[in-house]
Image 1 (cartoon, rainbow, N blue to C red):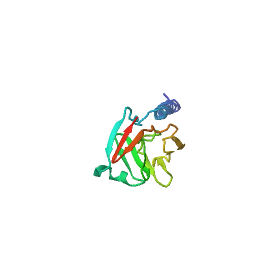
Image 2: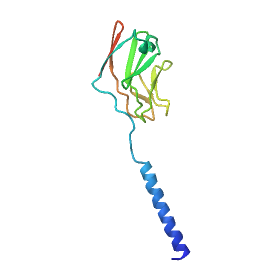
Image 3: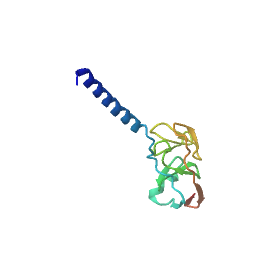
Length: 138
């Protein structure tokens, strides 16, 4: 084997390895946790663990759901994981929306995408507020 044949084989091998690596990196994988289903959660707002919900703009995470108090007495609940890559979203009082800090996706109060890169909405949940109890279902 002469020098040019040797270099040609090395170049072909390296190119093949690079191509396989790139194709593997382009493989569609999803690390986004599934949104909870068959939800039936009761939250006692007098409990210290839920104190953030006693103020407008406050939010908590519970069992894969983010629950927020948007305005006085108005509560919201959507799945907590951004549908783009699974980061936790948080509630922004200033825009009355859910925001993903990883890549900038925004979701409105019912979970619909208002700005990507996410293209799938967050799952929304029903909330009933009775006295000091929030009941989340969906």
